[in-house]
Image (cartoon, rainbow, N blue to C red):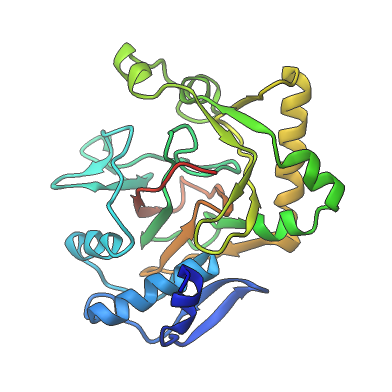
Length: 290
């Protein structure tokens, strides 16, 4: 029995679609007290739907890390300075300042991208847990890149299928809009440039997804730089049309998990002089794209 068949054979949870045929809001599940069997069903639901949302959760750092472990091995963070003391798997996203120092990274993740695309094995999924939420702004947007690929004309798909994209962490850190930094030689050695397919096949269901990104991409093999970047920007714009995008408006206690193998995502800005935002981010290790 293949993986998809196994997943579909499991007892389904009560869910509501996030958008059309993408994503699932799982209702009536308390992650802090859920049984191993229920947690396994939550993970199965994730693999089938591209993203899951669970609202009203109250999780300690230990419980949050334990939930992430249901999906696989938590992935470490390239930048360590905003990880939670005692819990290096948890990265803090916040504009909160304590004793004159920011407790987390602010405006991180603004711009359509997929996490860790500059690694040979990008993270499988990203998990965000909301602790403090602005009354307006700071939405997270998820683009269903399988749906975007499916709507391309067949001839266009044939043109794009063989293309290989050049990703670079060094280029990203030197050019990104927020928090540019010069990398140490050690960081450069630990994060060499990588090549990934432009069209990625999802290992759980065999669907193909547009898999461009902004920030880390600096070219396409065999294509002049200007032409390559124009194509990447065109495909990002195509795949992030409103018809493919779920916009998440946060509530305190939300846990949102999305599949980086078939989505792009972006954060959005908010009035950081008026509101405080605090999110806990975790990553789960993935495989080499194919």
